[in-house]
Each structure stands twice: as structure tokens, then as C-alpha cells.
Length: 335
Ligand SMILES: Nc1ncnc2c1ncn2[C@@H]1O[C@H](COP(=O)(O)OP(=O)(O)O)[C@@H](O)[C@H]1O
Ligand SMILES: [Mg+2]
Image (cartoon, rainbow, N blue to C red; front, side):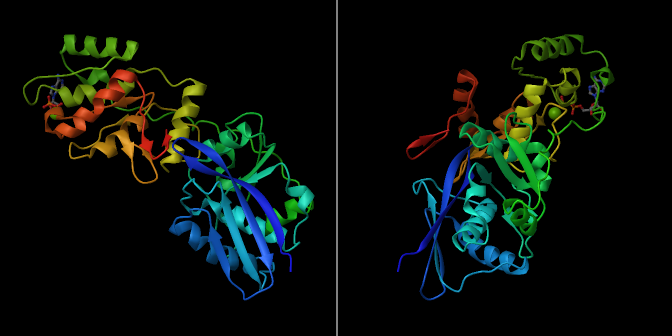
């Protein structure tokens, strides 16, 4: 017997960007099993249980049939729980619980709780940037991520609190307004001030020039002369980020889960401990994540006690310093 096939668009984080993933769901007669294929990691395979409970707890049907979900393209590694929502919508479509025509033009991305609430995801800005590039008019994300995702222009971002609400939306029974872009938090808290430093005129002048021109600085001197103190005060003399820079900073923080859902109003200041690994500094991992260099983008990366850092770690800085960007190779892909 022919099965019923449904497909839903979602986006997977790839470095600081996102790439389209099509979730296909096939329902056919057979023993009730739910299989997910297409290079899913553990969290994606666990989505089966979340999707099932979320549907049932939202008063929707979960079919007692054989369900197969495929995440395409199959050669892209799918990590994390943000595929839950697309899988749930795929099941709803394949079982005729929401009309197909309405889902076209939508991309969806979100994690589900067992109760059917949409839980916030990492990298909402990267997801909406990918969705806009792929030509989607509307993106559904958890309501907590909506204003952040709306930082990307020319795509309507719909913040949805629960699966039940999403079903109302897809059935045309609820039409929420598109989210407004995130605003920066009020007055940025004033950090430490360079004015606290007594004397050290030359060092201060050097830091001012470096701050103005975006140069690197190496401070050498005996203990206690104020090197750490000076370095920690550099963010205080940097201009506030422009809107585009703030969006870039927010996007990086959001991918690593450091953001607070608002627009970054300050430049980052990163001071990793000297025991940090090369991949912690440069970025890396099986599913590549940005490192401290990237987290300090448009701000300050401060390596206190430079001589204590591992030789290999410091050597790894050479290429990013010369090229001005970080490149991470994973198999056939480079980010
Ligand atoms: N020029 C200075 N003006 C004011 N305080 C200073 C100055 N130099 C050193 N200090 C004081 O000494 C402390 C130690 O300085 P620190 O920045 O840790 O030195 P270093 O990193 O060069 O070893 C600072 O926290 C600060 O209280
Ligand atoms: Mg020091």
C-alpha cells in the first residue's frame, strides 16, 4: 500500500550560518515504529519521543502506524534538538491534521517540550539568515527567539509559544503579527575605565592607537605594573558597535548560546584562561563550534600571561592573525 509523504523545511546550523534541511515524513501501514534517518545525532534521534509526547499532550493524534522521517541532504550532520518542530509538522501533514497548501513558503525551527511548548533554540539569527537566502517568506520559531531572528530583514518571523498555537496558525485560525527586530538593552553598564590607571602614559597611548586602528598589542613588563589592568580597560575606549556589527556579534553569541535574545550593545571582551586548547581558541569539535577568536569578533581577545599558553595553541593563532579569518575543515566542507 502506498504511504503518505509530507515534507517540511527547516534549517541546520553550520558554523555561523545555517543550511536548509528538508524533513520528509512517510506514514504507512505496519507495526507502529518511528524511524529517523539522514545522519541524525543522538539528540535528533531522541526527537521521536519528544514529538510523540508533544503531539499527544497537545490534543493531536500520533498515528499507530509505521513512520519514517528522512532529513535531507543526508550527508550533512544533523545535531541538536531544533529539528523537533519540523518533525512534528511533518507528522501532522502526513496524517492530514494540517492542510498541505498552507505549509508551503514556511520554514520552521524549534525544540519541543513533552507538554508541547516550543523551547528556544541556538542560532536564531543564523537560521533566519539561511531561511531568507533560501527564499522563504515566513519562518516559525519559538517565541523567545522571534525578535532575535527578526534582526534579519525581508523575512516574516512568527514567534509561536506552543505546538497547539502552531496548528492554529497552519489551519488559518490564528494570524500572529511578524516579530519586530530585537532592540539593544537600555543603557549599557559602564565597565572599568582607563581613567583608573595612574601614569603609564605611553602604554595608554599605545592602547588608544590600537583601539582606534584595530591593531594587536603585546604588553611586556614586570609583575604588578598594571598590564592586566590596562588590557581589561580597552573595551571602555572602543566605540559602541554599529547596527550591522551588533547583528554580527549577536549572531555569534546566539550560535554559542551566549546571547540573551537582545541586540548586543557592547563589543565582546574575551579573556580565556591560558590552559585553553587550540580548538577552544580557534573553534572546532565534531560539529564545529566557534572558538574564543570568533567570540571576540568586533571586540577584544585578551590573552593574559601569554607565555603560559601552550605552544601549539599559540601557533594555531598564526594563520587567523595573518588571514583575518578562521577556517575550519571537516571532511569535504570548510567553514
Ligand atoms: N598604573 C596603575 N594605576 C593604578 N593601579 C595600578 C597601576 N599599576 C598597577 N596597579 C594596581 O596593581 C594591581 C596589579 O596590577 P596588574 O594589572 O595585575 O599587573 P600585571 O598584570 O602587570 O602584573 C592592579 O589591580 C592595580 O590595583
Ligand atoms: Mg597580569
